[in-house]
Image (cartoon, rainbow, N blue to C red; front, side):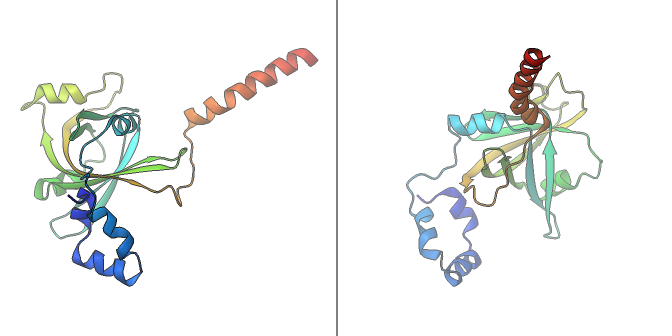
Length: 198
């Protein structure tokens, strides 16, 4: 069974591009794999639930792609089981581009980044949109009580394929919390040195 992402992504035109640029033979290994890679393992679950943002792509009815950044506190993207993830969709600018696209075409693709460690996870899936009046128990699973943002709906994603990307060309970036954590021991050491020399 081929890797699920290859089944989804390696269209006729993609294979033609791979042939033209000399990577077709190497990429065929994805099609010969025994593991479809469409279920999350423990490592991937931990990685997903430690993200505080991701990028998602949807496609409009007029075939235009739309990429949106989604963010929240670490863990706002929840793993519900080995094939399902979801998040509380907080009120934003109220244009509803992603939600409108998903109402017409339930396919979605996500990229989850770990910039400091140069890791990138790609997910393909299909979406089910849930509302509190219809599924209050599901919204309760997605809510983050400590995060004061209005939840308009839940986005439930059934995973069709998973693929880790190589770290090449990922520039390490750090959040304020990560920088403070790295600098803290240095500041503590500096304070001790000042006491000794003061």
